[in-house]
Image (cartoon, rainbow, N blue to C red; front, side, top):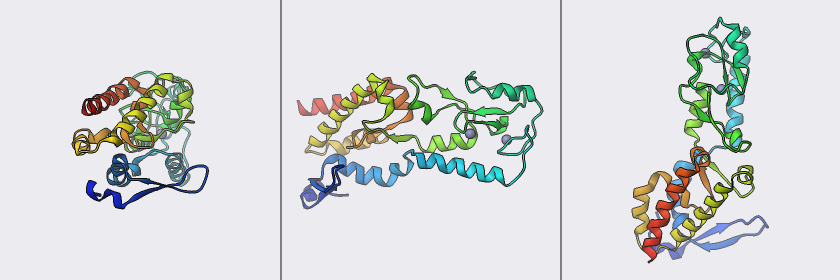
Amino acid sequence: MVPIEQRDQYVMQFKPRMGGEQLQPISNSDIIYLEHFLYRTRDYVYSQQIQENLFREKRQKASLRRFEPNQCRICGQLCTESEGFWASLLPWDTSAAHDVKTDSLKYCHFCMDTQTCNNCMAEEKMYIPRELQLEKEPQRRRVCRPAYELLEKYKTVRVDKENPALSFKPELRRLLVLRRIVHKMFDMIKCKLWEEMMAQHGETMFLILRDCYLTFDFICETESLEEELNKYFKKLQSHFK
Ligand SMILES: [Zn+2]
Ligand SMILES: [Zn+2]
């Protein structure tokens, strides 16, 4: 922890895209980044690499044994219904709670894999990262348990200006501007208000960082993002009045 009084003794070093390096005084959000984000949250930021690792692990496990066409690729359970299996091949089948009466194999929207038995499907539906960048209104979809665990753990993702989701989601782009304003205002606080805010909003504090980090839920449910950002904005605005 860098106490406010000693802050002037340190600088932040940045490497801009154009090359070279840039030194800047430490800001409030830098401290939040170093103290709370770098060591706690950043390990849970979703990336392509994490997704690839899960696929590789799954494929390796599956390659260790031979599977029948009607066998679950995760636990090896044999399923009977072949009709349901063909139905589960349809990726556009987004019916609500998946039917657990038949023991047909199910489609996992994350792995894009058709061979998962009922026991290996997660009960809760999740947003699929791939769809966030391709669809205007992504839906929560059925996924297998390993995919569920991964998506539960890695909920946050870094969104930069080039993110394709921004091209068809103007409201998200507008909110990212608001986020930037909140970030700038936060860095202007000179008193200990920010420590108070940190204690109060610890969960979503990544919203005030220099780089834009969002959870999948915030990207898909922009109303909740707006609500959260407005809370920060009002608090900071009343502080500067
Ligand atoms: Zn299974
Ligand atoms: Zn899966």
